[in-house]
Length: 495
Ligand SMILES: Cc1ncc(COP(=O)(O)O)c(C=O)c1O
Image (cartoon, rainbow, N blue to C red; front, side, top):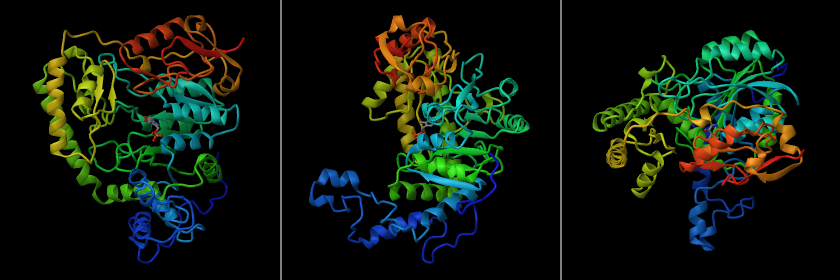
């Protein structure tokens, strides 16, 4: 994938526009447009005037400004987006960076479209997000799965083992890339530097879905971001751990092992042609915030999470709240507050319901795990409210300690029969789930949380997998993306 030419998008000295904040040009252009209040004859059709039509609708679209004919001219003569992307590339040490309004879903899929040719193999972690799996379908890439390694005591996923990557590349020397998900939903990370060293020895790039690590690299107490650790490309959700609009994401790459034209084509092929300037401006503003105040803000966040952990451990006996010392150095994001509930016998899904009743929804809850996302937008007041509520609901909901099973999403052993793309487009039929055993799945099924596909198109439906899905569903976890979430029927390929 070596690039011969380096088109305009590649880092180069773009002039900044006089009068705009040099550190956040896109944010500044967005604010300037709103201030100017032009009478626009471009889309969107609400024209910032929907309050004359409906107050509720006006509230819903307040702040929406398009990039084309809004933040910038229709012909993009201001170049604000390119300037902002260049600043982000500098921040991440990348040669190429694009802002996406389609979430890390779009960014991951654009990366899949930038790798190899139809039918090529990629070495991929099995704890991938569905967006990557569907990216493989779009690009017709064939996965060689890497199993996540598990902590023997807590059964937390520890990322992928370096030896597994090496073995996969030895078995599949024709593979064109290694694709990882770092960190996991639970904040754990692989030994990325060592994996990159192996992948580069085999001549392939490493692409990291770092959706949950947009804050990485901004403080010595949090892991370095994937590019700083040697990866060739990285995707991150600015709306998850930073403060971007929902769907705000970015993708960046170093171009030694990528063709910039391919990166651009992959990105544009799947991105909207009407990106929201407000979403893009929030990416620019979040990156500028990280650059100017990241260390201070993350200092505060680390202290808040450390304090919450100590309180929870001391006030709820039996509750496990892992920290960075429970993993190898660099193997855990210390801003992640992960509660392991088996020792207190509480049911995470029941706890989640009680927290929602108190106006405190959390990001991830299954029977054995609870993960409230604490971010740089929290302070001692919000975290105090969370900790008090957690202590109370866990004490009320606790029972006898339970054995900790291996969570289904981290213990998948897929049997691939046909490629995801072949299965996706093949003729298929709905059959009673028990009759689907021994057949090839046409669908993707992921218990949510954590949203990792435990069954992918093209994989064998086994009795063990079906029983596992049913028992996870019985705990109250949502069976996401299944054509029949009750699991009465499954979609399989016709014989
Ligand atoms: C690991 C991972 N990658 C990608 C995504 C998709 O991100 P987005 O919601 O920004 O599209 C998610 C969403 O939760 C995720 O957890």
